[in-house]
Image (tube, rainbow, N blue to C red; front, side, top):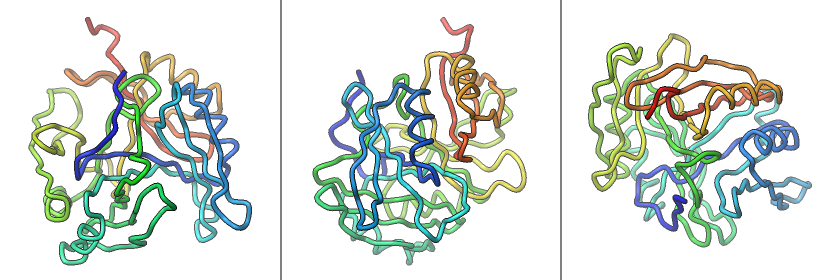
Length: 264
């Protein structure tokens, strides 16, 4: 069981859904991934935050939307670990990005900031205190990969290197994958995420969230039965596995990743 109690700086450490209908989102993802959802009050007006757990280990979060996002579809956000969040956030403007919120304390759980890279992709920073973020990953029902989508990989990846000290490596993709250019995000010599340009025009810069499943075809059928929609039909990437893009009933986009049917 892959469990985590710490994350090195620059590593994706948590994923969080912001949704206009928390109850419906909790029901969808709880059924799809087998999560147990626990809600706690977080505001003075009845707002709540739901923690998603698998076998008692935290895997993700589900939050209601802020008033200024009324009418916006649900979306998944990614958090990157920061050892000294204030120092990292302080370097954002000079590297060409923008601090949109924070840094600020989240009770005794940790310290966070929301930023935008120079190409427009939004991501959060997290300095752990009592909560590190995702405690269990890389197995069915948990996050397995995070991926930056940007039209200017050179500008975007240089930004993350400048503020977090991470490195990037060009990774040739297998013929027939449909992916012309891919880079891996490396921390301490280990690939922890990726980056690629949009596969079609009109897709804004963002971070993708992938969840592992044991059977992508079965997971798609389950998602559809719960009201989800297939955004990208299942396809195989050699040496990676089977992937599919799904939209939840509130408009949140996420990806499924599992073994190819012919995998040994």
